[in-house]
Picture (cartoon, rainbow, N blue to C red):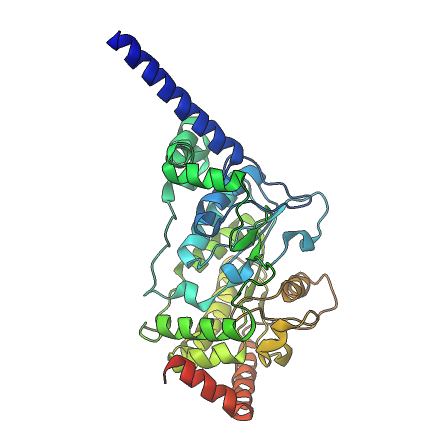
Length: 389
């Protein structure tokens, strides 16, 4: 009788675990079991901010995109459908706080699976600082393919099984599955094309406009004031070397900052280093092009344009919007970036950065910043108070 009881108990337990695994697979709270729908993209019913390094590794493997966007959360607003290349798959692989190492590994993962035709890369100075971590939480080497052997069945299973186990049998996965099934709203809206933005429910307090500028300014100052201004372009060089070698079209742009954030860079003693980083990036692109006997990849900058940098509160308008908060763009400006860098529209917001134009570009951005600071003394005083200076 005792034995019969134990048999029934373990059978019931096995059924319960199987049902739980089936629930997690069906609801797919981390978006790793089902291929993302792109036409049109649909919202995920779960908070994915801390799991995007898992989600996007799998979606790159499923979708095999022809057009790929990558960068930090500042590139997350760039809508892949705006690339408008019929019969091609476009996906936004942006990751929050992406490091240059992560950028290289995710691009290598995508290239190993199927070589993209075009890659658009948003560059952030912070991604290259050597005092920051090499990669962020929930990044795992095992889930990213590095060569063709990693795509073989056994090697593929070895890459995937830790994530499958955690996504089908963990308590956290069950909680996320139930939240997904019950459609609990998260703080953000994550779309299946890889983009995301804040959820704007009536009466919800969001860090947009002035509160957003103040919060981001203080966060950046506290984070970088004590960090060295030493950066490394090692992984950008690896990315570009491989893309030149494989003849992949690449377009790069430097994520612009408006004048308040540029002032924060000054107060944190990173402004001059960020300027030099832009020079070095321009030089690297041209040096690599010469070594591969190729045309340099286009690099774009936007901070010399006062429409972009001069008025941070443009992000509060619905027309001509630029920034939603201290760093992140509006959808409208994201669309304008894509039109500019792909030459698919009439926008004239950006400057092509080359060895011949970079110094004049940086001189103009510095002059515009000085003018802004002189013309807005009250704004500068509020900023210093916010930063505790």
